[in-house]
Amino acid sequence: MGAHYDEIARLDAAYVLPTYARKPVLFVRGEGMRLYDDDGREYLDFVSGIGAVNLGHAHPAVADAVAVQMRTLVHVSNLYQVEHRAALAERLSDLAGGGWKAFFCNSGTEAAEGAIKLARRWGKARRGEECVEIVSAERSFHGRTMAALSATGQASKQEAFAPLLPGFTHVPLNDIEALSAAITERTCAIMLEPVQGEGGVYPCDEDYLAAVRRLCDERDVLLVLDEVQTGFFRTGPAFAWQGYGVRPDVMMLAKGLANGLPAGAVLASGTAAEALGPGDHGSTFGGGPVIAAAALATIDALVAERLGENALATGAVLRTALEEIATRTGAVTEVRGRGLMLAVQLAEPRAQAVAAACLERGVVVNAIGDSIVRFLPPLVCSSTETAILTDALSAVLGAV
Image 1 (cartoon, rainbow, N blue to C red):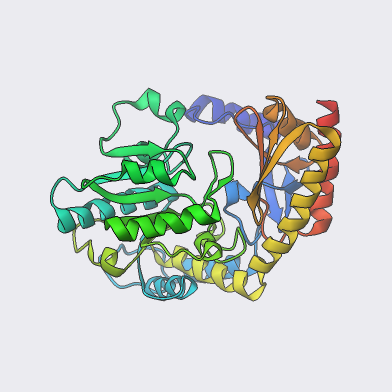
Image 2 (image 1 turned 30 degrees about the vertical axis):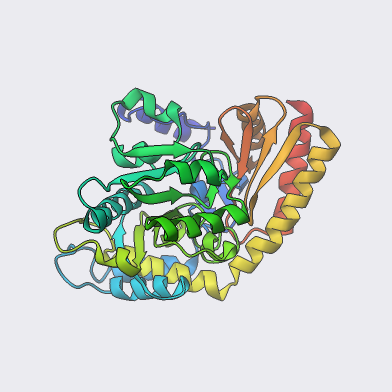
């Protein structure tokens, strides 16, 4: 690290609120799976902006779409019709099998807020003013704004900001009896991640998610799926629920929607799509022409390059290699995930040290808490890159 890094770090410490414990590296350029720091050193990226850069860094189709739109029209607000927004909504609906309407925002946490408001409005119209409660899962993560944080099932992220919003209940994931017992006449929605991301990459069981869908139909509540991290071919299909064969009423999208640019969306179908009207919700920047153009280019490239198929194939190779490390070293007790959304559970609480040692070897991975290391590479990842990752991980686990 040179003088440029030192100056950036100094300014960051002096003028930016310390809400992140930043790693000692300054990335200045990216291409595909690779990142480059201010000294020109190359790294393999298995974080992809926390699962956002699904196409890989600096994809030319997205860059070109953004450049053209930036020179044409950047912003006029949602008070008017704008280029690309309606086309993007249609494209998302088609990806999800048709019959969806979209609300656009700027992030996953905003998508959660929009979905919560929609569900409450739907519940009130359905069963009266008291039908506003939402059941979500322990260990879940839906965002850091107040309603999204209230839906989140992690006390460690909530305690400092109490009191939270009332109306949220949390039950263990994959426990259908606990979920059924939590539903009352005041329940308007069940909110779940098909694969819990920030909670440690814990997938819903196949039978469980199907049982949740049946339960929602029987008890007349909405099924809201948080696809912020699982969406856009991360687990193979366009959306993880398609791999389960379980269609939600509402889904939340962000991260991979515009390949790293700030974009989010709430998609609703059936009666849920009728819940909100003019003035009920809004966003100054959501679905603006630049972001919508980027998202359209992103989706087109993901489909054209068949990256969902690659996520399944390369994810299977990586999972096998990680399981071999677990068997051979004993340092890993479990491998979890779907597609190219994978994690290892370490036998000892040293995830931060493992991630730091991997970074020194030029491999960027994500430590979740004390004992989980997560892998979310761009979907252009190949078995060549996964072999470099697993070689580095094997060496690090033996040395840390």
